[in-house]
Image 1 (cartoon, rainbow, N blue to C red):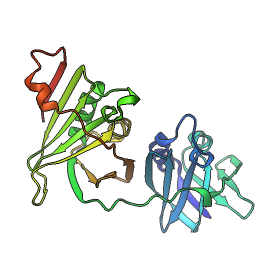
Image 2 (tube, rainbow, N blue to C red):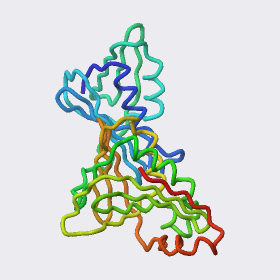
Image 3 (cartoon, helix red, strand yellow):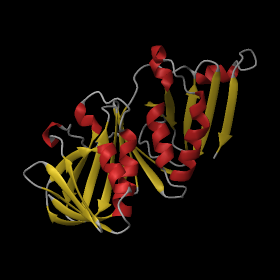
Length: 265
């Protein structure tokens, strides 16, 4: 594998995907960033087994291939490169030769064949929301998400999709936060679709979303969800179980010590 890429391009991509790297990876391969060539671009991938982030980066590909490099070490090295072009070549010795203006470095690769295959989700349901409104809605409900792993379903955020709006609900038994995003959704014959997304995944998505009216595409089925915005894709596994009937909580809010935050968009 051999390619040339601008440092600002690859640093942006690495800044996105390395958010999926866990502090203590469950497997050694989860500590790496998978780099794959695709015509005039690179596909960067990081995962911890629960959340996966991919980013596409423009590049001049000289020789196709793939390599798995230590994510944090590689990202730190790229940040220290001078502004401009960096040349990276991986040969049969399983070492990456990294060359830029005034710098010549070598880095050992990891076994790329052990990296899990991450495929796009063929979802039954599809939602498009403005990035800035979706990002702000997440930030306003996340404080009410539970950290209690014994009640796993409450560590997620309920995403309730209606034909004319999407609701986000965070609830931990003491606090309830609800955000409404007005946007038309094509649900076919259905009148409502509910899914519970892990709070950590939506938290990472909200940090990556741009402050713009560009749309984030959300595709999900009964088990998985995928967010696509710009050159970035975020994949995650949905939570299963029955979420608390928050509507009942709203009707009894006068009798229950609960903090309620509600806002329309």
